[in-house]
Length: 361
Image (cartoon, rainbow, N blue to C red; front, side):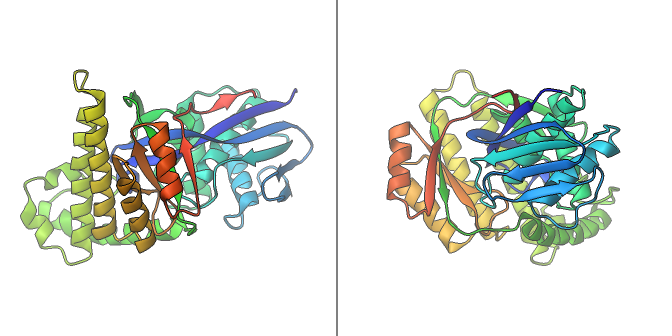
């Protein structure tokens, strides 16, 4: 079979951060920093990262042993085989513009691009839902990363996507009326698995208490009926810290996102006013992440302040937090570049909204 080429974008964690693994809707923005994969049939599974020089050779179905580059490749193959897709082997190369460990879903871009390429190589066509779900299965079920579906679906579908994360998953495209995003890299690398594990442990304890108080049945925080807590301040207030703060965060982030979505869906609202209001919700969400979820750092807070001081409508951390990047919404390209130049970021990018999984060059 001929060479198969794919690419998938990195994504910005735009609205409702840390909510996808709770079964709540999230908004992703795909950007023009992409991961590219090219594969062809071979006897073994073999792939080289042109970014890091890592070279992987393994047998189809060989399980991962950690969470390094080669383990992600192995996880994609395992997930495909579990879904009934048989692979004889492949040889390939990967290159990426998406910074690793910066909160822009580099691992999801890798898995989406590779999954799409391997499906095509195996003679199987799959829609974006199937590709995204296989990439999610590779990361969560095979590698054991306690993530939600934001990253994989955001990368696969691209653009500005509202992702309803509770199965059956549904993705809706949104229109952003202008504006330019700037990404400010703090230079602090983080571990998504470590951050998510700690917060999810706290949520599990909170939900067990709330189930007793409300008399509801659910398996855990991922299918808990969060809407039942509206008007039940008594149930929330009885929780000890930090569980109370984690639950208040969940409710307030959802309210903020609903306000932003109402603005984005309003056909009559002036575009400039929509962007300003959405920017204010972004900044509020960063405050909630910092104060109630405790996943910010002074370095990230500083980048948010610098961005707003240089003309951003709003700014917030993107991804798990405790490192990574801050994203800011600017009125235009000129302002976005000014924000980047004036910031203390290690590096920065003014980015365009981009499409999702793409086949070919």
